[in-house]
Image (cartoon, rainbow, N blue to C red; front, side, top):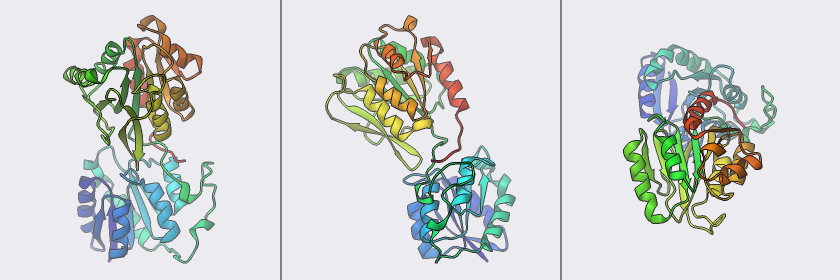
Length: 356
């Protein structure tokens, strides 16, 4: 009997995989885990023969866990993830790190049963794979297929299915933000926004946007998830940053000195998005006075983000957009009425595979 441990943060996927695998006469799911930390305890406790592993999980992504696992406790792993389309860099990296096979999830967890035959075959193959737990996994070649230079313990996901939209605005920004958000769909990727505004007004502004937009809009609180269908507005007199945990993004609300005489500061937000989200981010610079956000937007561009800047003709004040263009941070410049359309087009082009 092949003992399998299923690691996936989706309760639905865990249930469906367990039911499908337990139908096989030679396979038994001995346990499940919601993230790599729980998986580590279950491996020691249950001693499974094969691990199925998702890549997008909270606290630690699957590639990071796979690298650590193969270094300290090599065992047969089958990656089952929406981030591993055939021949993608994530798939190649997972195989390089030691996964026996990679299976790409269909578009919806409800159709996981459609690939049960592939998963069963992969698990049976993995069960007979040989793993020498005395071998130093550090001896693996450091140049995986695809030309991405990385050692196993450094692997992490670069492209994720979770995307981030970062918006900065000042003078004239309340109407500009309203124009952009009301043109976006309910399932838009998570949005983090800074509008230069006194504390007494940010709550009311968020409430107004929430009443007229398809997505949920609210004033951000510390540790709020930045997730699809939600737009978070930085509270007045506090900086907002975006941090990453595993493959998930969270808002951090902090004090700190004003930047460009502003708190919240667009630069503070954009620099954090550049660091935490990189190519998974899209930046939007709207009307405003001064230069807040230009350097942070440039950092986002250097990290691989696509940046959309409002043009002069549609701005109330062209200061912040002009400075972003001047330093080379803009990927494109367009009118306010076209920003939402351009944003959704760029998001549709973003890949969901790749590692660094």
